[in-house]
Length: 168
Image (cartoon, rainbow, N blue to C red; front, side, top):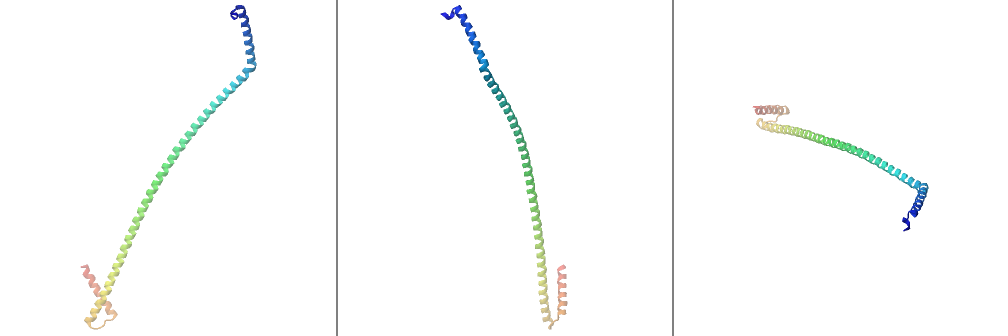
């Protein structure tokens, strides 16, 4: 085998190093700069993407904290509004109850007043009828017609005696 011959092998190693050196120089001169530039640009983009992702994550966390704070504030406001509404409803109920009590009391007083007026009217009617009957009886007993003054005097006497008999 000729490739393992030392004389042939040493010249082969020389040409291999030379071709490797030329290949390395060509690669270094023409291939590596664009490759390294692409790798550097890709590294830069990845770093920017990571930094941007970190910024977005921080912004999202900040917005989440703001949202939670707003949610807590809204919850407190809702509780405050609910408490105020309950208090207002209670106050309205109490006012309605008071108004009903007042109206009931007023109706009761009006009814009492009407009853008193009707009682007075009835008593007055009874007095008038009693007076007329007493006058009729007195006319028949006396046998003559009495004038208005006599009627009045007799009615007053009869009423006074009835009132006195009621008191005792």
